[in-house]
Amino acid sequence: MRKLSYLFTVLFAASILFTSCREEKSTGEKVEDAVEEVADDVEDAVD
Image (cartoon, rainbow, N blue to C red; front, side, top):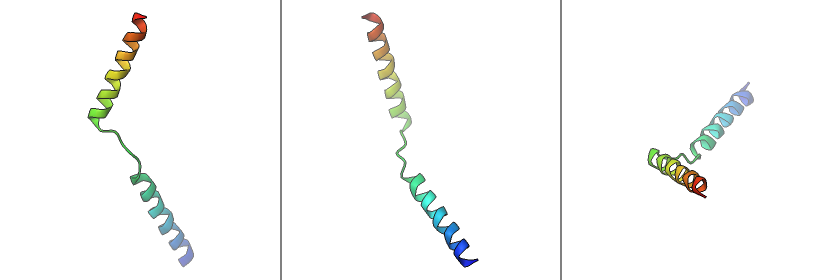
C-alpha cells in the first residue's frame, strides 16, 4: 500500500513539474504574432 501511495505522489509531482515548464505566450506576443501573420497574408495577396 505504501508503494502505491509513493507512486501516486511521484507521478503527481512529475506532472506538476512538466506542466509548469511549458512556455506560455503573453497576450502582447499573441497579438504581435497575429499582426505579423496578417501582414504576411496581405503581402502574399499583393504579389
